Image (spheres, rainbow, N blue to C red):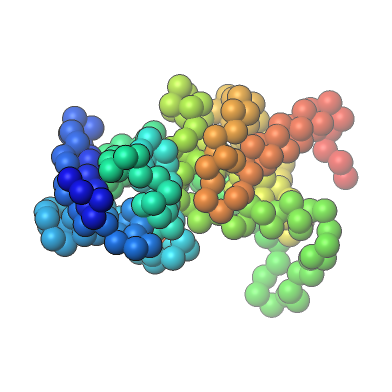
Length: 240
Ligand code: FES
C-alpha cells in the first residue's frame, strides 16, 4: 500500500456480516462518501449504502467511520484516516438492512411517539401567526429545527444501546422544539409522553449527541429543558 491509496474496511452483510477490505485511490478533498461511492462503482456494485444530496442537507449518508458516527458526505478522509485505514460501518443502535444501509423506521417511529408532529389551531383561512424572532421561545425552538434527521446522535447514544425503548436525542430534541413553538396546542399531551419511562428522565447527560451532531444542535440542552419543564409542571402545575 502506498500514500496514493487507502485501505477501506467496509461492513458487508447484515448483523452477522464482516468487514471486507478494499484498496481505494486517494484524491484531494476526498470525502468518506466518495470512498464508498468509488467502491460501489469500480470494485463491487453490490455494495448497499444510502445518500442523496451530498451537501449535508438530507441526512441520509450517516455511517460509523473509524468508530464514530458521522455524515459521510461532509467528512473529509484526511480528517479521519488512521494510518492508511478507514473503517466504515453502518450506524449503531439501528437494524442493518444490508451493508451500510440501516433501517431508520424505529428512529422515526420514536419521533412520532414523542409527538414530533406540529399541532396548530389555525386554518388556512386564518392570518399567519406572528412569532417574534427575538423571543425566548423562538430562539429555543430555532436551534432544533436545523435537525436533518441523520441519526448520528441516536447512533452515538449509549442510553439507546442500554435501553432500546428510550426515545433518544433526536426525537426529544424535536419534542422540545415544539414545546417552545407558541403556535402548537398540544404541549400538555407531549409533555406527558416525554415524561414517561422511555423519555427525557432516562437521559444520563453523557453528551455524545451534542458532541457529534453535525449541525451543532445540542440535544442535551433540549432534554435538560424537558426535564426541567416536567418537574416544574409536576410541582407547580401548568402555567396559564
Ligand atoms: Fe445528504 Fe450527506 S448525502 S447529508
